[in-house]
Length: 297
Image 1 (cartoon, helix red, strand yellow):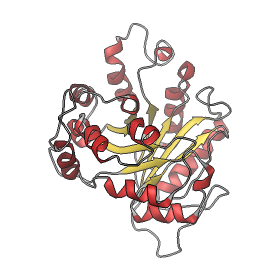
Image 2 (tube, rainbow, N blue to C red):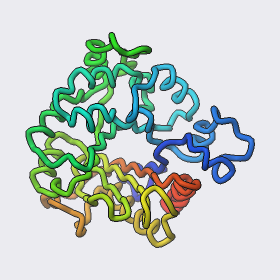
Image 3 (cartoon, rainbow, N blue to C red):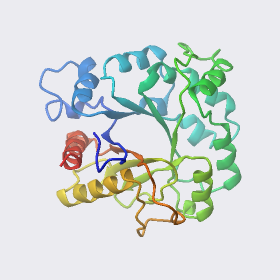
């Protein structure tokens, strides 16, 4: 969906994952086959996060199946491997990065959106560590294919070809309050990486600095992590914020670490991705549709 006046960016609203059994009969129609869940979700919204990639390498055949099940305008955000973020903690990760990109992301073609890197809550801000990691990230699908080719030998169903050389985009979700520093914001801006706006019922630090042309929002729960619905007032607030970001504005709030330097008004908007992660009892897809409806008004 497109929001705002001419020149405004695009807002996509979706869910974090789509395979939840608790959505059967609450979001998915009764009798819908499990294999058709993504197809149904793709008929109602235009983006989703791939979560399985966080836990283990997927197969290229799965990525191809997902691409085939969704409309042309659909986009997938792909969650980066926890082996890289939680076990290696961003250090000495060139080889696992290569395996991650070889596992099939590029088979999504034009439907590949940003890669999300979620850091563990015990990983503190370390400029050298984070910058070293960001420098390793391929900036185009061609670079990703080259990195994948060099590390595909341990991947069971590799895919190391980019159909077109497109830009690669990234988002970083941090979970430690030590990232509340202007140095962290400046580093992400220098590398054009989005700092995730992570709403987690007060359990996660909430930062809303705009650090790239992409704004990436994860809504984990209003009152309780991964459970419960967002109420009407909260959805109204998130809709207003999404419109601002899409229009190129970056309002300063209590969650802002280092406001952007004032300058000429932006001539183009930003892409805004919003994902609901309050998956219990089917709240995420219902909230996603409710937010999308507000953005269309």
